[in-house]
Amino acid sequence: MQSAWREKLILRQALLCEYTPTRSLREKIPLTDTLVIVSKDEMLRRIHCDYLEMPDLRLSRAQAQRVWQLDEHTCTELLESLTDGGLLQRSHDGMYALLSESAVAPLTSY
Image 1 (spheres, rainbow, N blue to C red):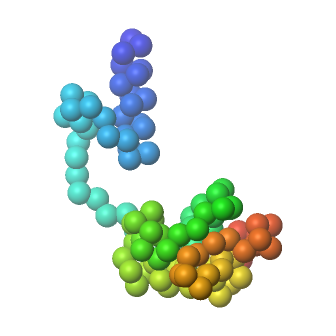
Image 2 (image 1 turned 180 degrees about the horizontal axis):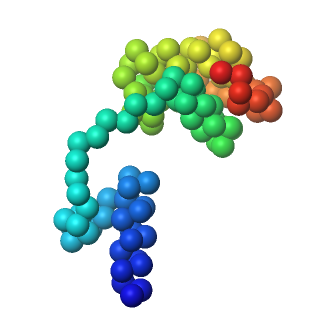
């Protein structure tokens, strides 16, 4: 009984957290190609939340692309949107960081 419960827990982690289970468990997970479509507002919220959770986070556009798995155009558009909205700032070396005043900004400002 406990083994079945543990297996369900691991499978849930695999589906929710992109956890890669061991080979024996992978064989039990039906693998399908999926495409997740996320709205622009959701991505803006996600990026802003990540910066709020890690206030010292400083990322270049290329690093942000890898972190949020975005193409160059989309990533640039989102980062510039947050910068224009006064939530992020872009330094002279191209690093994006949280504006200190935006740490208390509401997330509904998108």
